[in-house]
Length: 209
Image 1 (cartoon, one colour):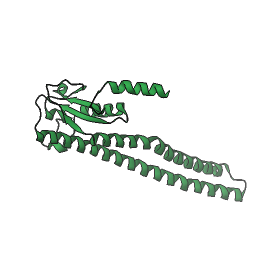
Image 2 (tube, helix red, strand yellow):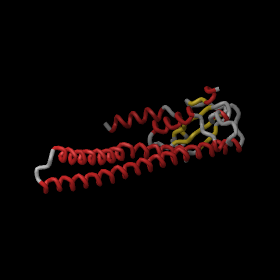
Image 3 (cartoon, rainbow, N blue to C red):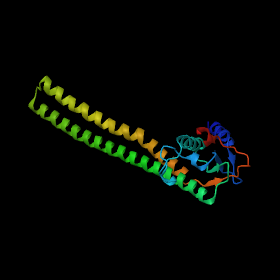
Image 4 (cartoon, rainbow, N blue to C red):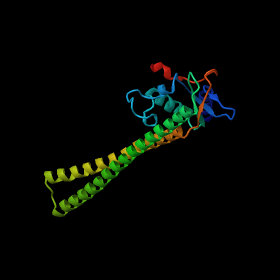
C-alpha cells in the first residue's frame, strides 16, 4: 500500500516542472498583471483587490494535489513585468491568502465557540435530567407525564452533547487543513519567467478576457 501511494505521488509530481533543487514549480500564465485580479472593483488598489476566482481555485487545487512537496509559484506575462509589478504580484498573493487564512481561523473559532456552548448546555440539561429522575424516584410511582418529561430532558441533553462533539470532530480538521493550505501559498516564493521561455503551467489568465 505504501509503495502504491509513493508511485501515485511520483506520477502527480512528474506532471510539474521542477527547479534544479527539485522543488515543484506551479506555473501561472496571463497576458497582463491585471488579469490576475477580479474586475468588479475598478477603484481599489491592487494589494486590496481579490485575486481572480479561477486563479485561486487553480493554486489551491495544485497545492492540495502535490501534498507536502515544496513548491514555488512562477508567473509569466506577455511582457516581462517591471520590479514594481513583480512586487505587486508578490504582495497581492501573500496578502490575499493570509486574509483567507484569517477568515478560516475566524470560522474555526466560531465553530469552537458553538461547540463549547452546546457542550455546556448539554451538561446542564443532563444534570437537570439526573436531578429530576432522582426526585421522581424518591417520590415513587411517577406518572406518565413525569416519565415523559424526564426522558425528554435526557434525550435533549445527549443530542446537545453529541452535536457538540460531532461539530468539533468533523469540522475542526478541515479548518486546520485550509488554514495550513492558505499559509503555504501565502509564504511560497514567487518567481517570474521570460515570455520567450516554454511554459509547463496549466492556468491561463487570458481565458477570462
